Length: 398
Image (cartoon, rainbow, N blue to C red; front, side, top):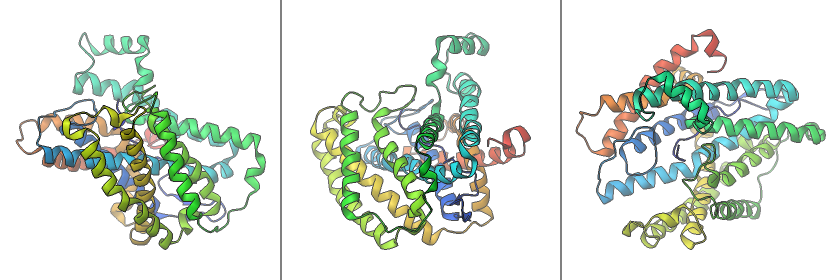
């Protein structure tokens, strides 16, 4: 599936997020960021369904005007630039204390249970049922016939759907466990409140993300997937995960000053606005020529990679500061959403498609239908996830 099949909320931590093995403090704002990202994932797939961009199991895209197309493009591109990378950063932050508590073998067993098992269940059950009975993308001849054909051909290896994030995070977790085996001294570094990185370090990080993404997208442009992973996006994921590992012991997720977050949010997001306008005006979008945006050795791809890096860093820091100051509590609804976040993500693809089919007779603008589909999917998936959590066998992984 395409890059717009996005990341799940499980950032290698159970719903009651804690930071720092030595203090075990609950970070309510991290839980709230997680379930907010889930709702954004639902909205992304609703936009894939009705908009002219992206890819999804089942689409009802119809011709739209320039204003509507630009709105879809701006919203989806902005989301894609930051929300998966932000989740990889948070995953890195929680990977360190999790490994410290459990040590290598228990850590890997936990990751296999929480990341590997639900991914396999999706690949072998939820995804196939969705494609055959709802999306109608598997052909006919009976579900059992198509399912066996799917297994024999090896197609199932590339059909993680939105669970590709769990597969990638499992690989990152294994890599970190190996690092800790060869560098055991890393575990002795105490958790400490460290000053924020310098402005020069942030500039280097943004440049490294932009350059690495540009170079990878020369041979591997967007839209080209290997095992359902868009490797052209992975430089930002790897860098954000690595910074999360570094940030864990330095408590940056808790201690970065608001002034630092606000300053860098402004320094990145403000110039990103005119850069985006230039890319739209001069990059070929107005003439319908969009190939250069996906990658290759051209200035449009370079500009887009820089824009994505600016948005990634700026939005991540802005959301960190906003949620830490304004959404650092867990009321009943927020607690329920946090506890069901992974279940919502895991089960939402068939819910999206079933509701899309139910809404076919509704005549409304594409943007309005996307918003309605998002709302209905959130409500229905939340209800189903609550039921899943009451099932003993599924509760352990959902």
